[in-house]
Image 1 (tube, one colour):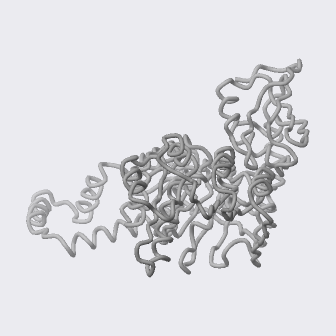
Image 2 (cartoon, rainbow, N blue to C red):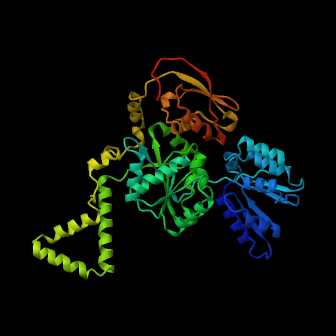
Image 3 (cartoon, rainbow, N blue to C red):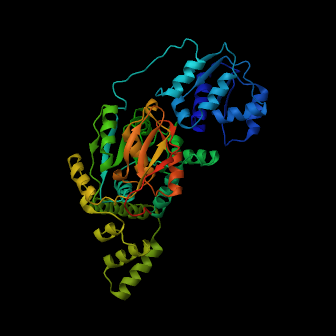
Length: 480
């Protein structure tokens, strides 16, 4: 499904074939120049590891022949379904010789993937690998209930206090990854985005920088992080809640690699508490509530960091010339030497305070009272939220192109619409799930740009393709 996975699998094939001299493996994927691919294909290769889109390109150009193919492997078929490659796969399989062998690997078997298997596999044997738990035991899972404090402020506190080597932060949309990186950089953190719009060359540079330690924070979408294998990732933060438990398992699987321990942190709103329970059932592991670092924790960590910086400078730099100036200043001014040191620290910080105050935290959107929100307080927060719900206005019926056969549940629809459309749960009503589509009542005045965005959202492997079916008249204010 992805360029990163194609490269990873090609490298693995070369490694497995290290004692088979003369065996040539070629990865081909979009975003890479055609010339090296064409040169390698002309010389002849035994194994091609490819993304579906680039295979179609080569077939259209006449630069790739499938006439002598003896085996076809579909890797991560469910992910290729989510990315819209099913038609391409169907076309490719229709062009390979009938006597070829086909193997299909998939974390799940949704309807369209089953139909591919029934159509193109001959007398297939289905092998299901089951494990005692869906997630590794060496990954500690925690959640923080979003209530009263902006998620960005919560993430900032974690970055300042939580010891980590490298951190992978998951956001739901391409735009969100870029926006979050910009906000983190504005707060002094070096971060990079990974999403489907990133050029392959830039993606490879970002992953190389993450592996080498040049950057420690990457913000990614689910698709862009697929196949990402970086041992030094110690923390995965689910900044946006995944649509389903399978996505959650794939996300947190990016940490705890090569036998190392890992940390998985889930930011979850009160209205998403059902997803927390779904994830716990699917992983068969409890997710424990966590306390965010307090202002005192942040300030203590900043003080320790500042003292270490001072120690490093004293131990490694020649300070004789500065010392002479300071001694002269103290003699002339009679100033206390500690006041002088504090003034120099302020100068080094460009006048910015070293410590966070309660007032500055609140101005950033944080509220100290939200440090501790155990699971039992979900209900009281929900009741409080119900008292501040948006006024009800006219609603309309919309059709969604995802239904029962895709395995969709009402919670999937509510989660997607609430997060991607900035809708309150009280605005999402009358969900009616049919075989291959669903209906839902939403505010009639949803802006056009929001509907366009929702149309692209993928739920259970299907684009929503949301469209208005019937407008209902009703009292209420127009939604802005």
